[in-house]
Image (cartoon, rainbow, N blue to C red; front, top):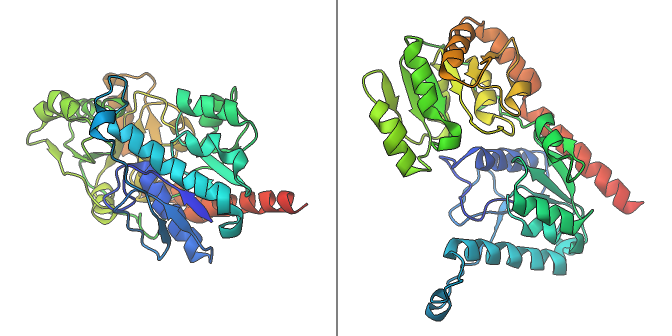
Length: 352
């Protein structure tokens, strides 16, 4: 199997985001089940299992090319050349190397070129519709089989393509129950669309301290909206690996999830629930499916006052019931079972 990941962010801890964590978890479990997995990922990637890492070739424009007024950013060209090189390899020799290609990237080229690859390709749609993927789907036609990570994303993409819904999964061996505590926690990419500043404000209104963890993806936003809120009751713990993050989340009373966009799934919510920590969040995208009455509370409106009420209500939930729900609904085994079943059906169709 060829698993296509990000050519920009390495697949290694601490993960840049949920997409990278999902790639690592999926590749590791597929390998554990006996699949031979080759991963195309950014330089510096390091997975927890001995898989083949496919090269991401560097690209550096010449001085003359960079001088052109219409030259796109270097990072755009680097990603374009990396995925183009991979897809040309798969066009030439993919049928001799792999049985299935699983596209777990957000780039348009694997989608556009899927029809030219002589093995089944599955593309996971991890975002609401974006123009580069939507146009790629329109051009490629039936080249890929599409998976969405929640029913909400399936509905969001329904105008462009049909899809199978496979909910993301959390490894229960890594995200284990914790003792809880008195503080709130927020984890994820620190960026405007994740709105950690609103989590801080809601925690304060509820009378709780809060700890934030995650990579700072937007320095201007962090300086303007987060740093000024830091203090004795608001702490930034940094960008943590999974083990340290699990300890932090598991020792917290409630986890806040505050997207200002339609969250495709909400992996941080599933991770928190696996630790037994109930979730309080905004009712956006996949969170409406992920956070259930036994595992958390969603604000009745997208504002800090309603979120504060959700925090207080979620904190009263039984941690054992929260953990049991997460284990049953968002376990790793269920997710990989679903992907294996999909791969098997595609291979049977190809052989028929």
